[in-house]
Image (cartoon, rainbow over all chains, first blue to last red; front, side):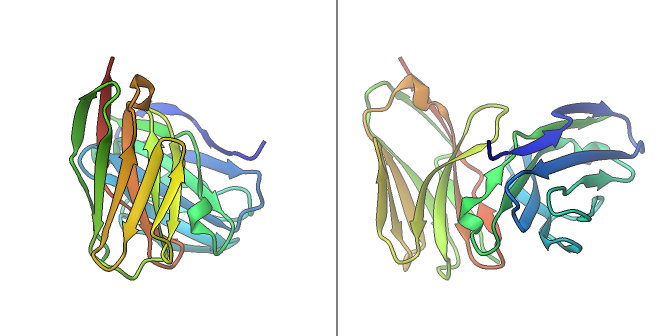
Length: 113
Length: 111
């Protein structure tokens, strides 16, 4: 089954404790992206990757890091989480040139205390 | 910078009513526009995709129109049902594989 998986689905942590949210897709997609969703602000792109070892900033990259060492994985790293990073995070993937077919993961709800 | 606005932010209707959700975007140079559905705490499900050269798309009780020149799209839902209750998101693709989303319309259909 074609899918994008994210782990963990729910996470409560404390300020400053480094964490990683994993994202994996099984469709051999080139393009992967991270979004955050906040009430009243909608979905905003954090980072994206056009292929292995190619990443770039989205609209709200501050406080986040990503890496793309393998085509299937695109982890989101919060080196020193802060309460303003409490949000619902979505990973998405699509074949290059077909952004309209983006498959979205189920989301990770992160709470930073 | 592309901005996408959805009106209304929330809508509550009785079952069986026909309804229209609105989406507007500031830059008409888009490749396509897409309507998504999001259930509480869940991911996004694509409902309809309209390519920039198209005027409308239909799927079952859903019909989406696109007027690129005026920067507007509407999602028409016929004979609404309680199962249609969800948040509906509009997104445009303007290049660089990037989707720009509106903030959504939260729809409640009351039995």
